[in-house]
Image (cartoon, rainbow, N blue to C red; front, side, top):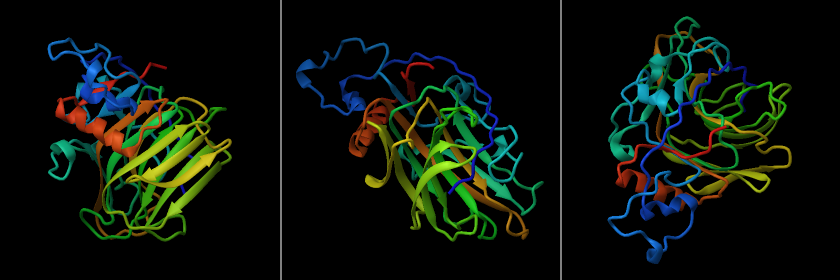
Length: 312
């Protein structure tokens, strides 16, 4: 279970209007396609696209690609925690080809350490819109059970989570997927923690742990609707929180790969986490099948990024 976060976040937003999808993408809202109501083949697409939808499959050239910022993403470089403080770097963020990924491209988050603070690099990629609240959050993520190079044994944390812009907010909100292949904070791994937060300081949260090895690709989903939050893995519900452990303000999406501590100094090692795509649908509970159907539609029509979620 994660520690309270102490994160200073830079914020920027560039509004973007994209060409929209036709009826093949009506699954964005989880509803059926009405063939009779479908536009003619030569009709112009709806300018705004599917309303309340965010999708990105990370087709960027690198952390300095202007499109990355224009589409509302940034690679963290500031100080603070969690993990090994002040070790956040852009060097671990990349967008390589990957034959195991849908569409053949991924966001790669590669953390590295030699067991010293000076030799440690953590990586986090975060959205910058501050405008995601209730609805369905989903991502296809590749977890690693062992380092890409070097000795195994690090207490690494591979994460996907929506979170408030400020830890000090009176309406603090955070919803976590955290995979710890080797455990951490005195626990053993592997473990997947789901954590719903009410306050960061002092910590006020509820959590669930799945003790299972999860090397490989998985679809992670968080549905925050009707006064409850449900976490699911590959279509199977894992945990539901309610009461005060639900979102209370708008959030951003973060992906990070970081170290709880430095348990040994035995040469360099690197850990990879990969993200194939991310999806958000505002104010609707969308099934995994319909999320995948919508994502397939984006790929089939050549859409790499769309954001029609109203700005904060």
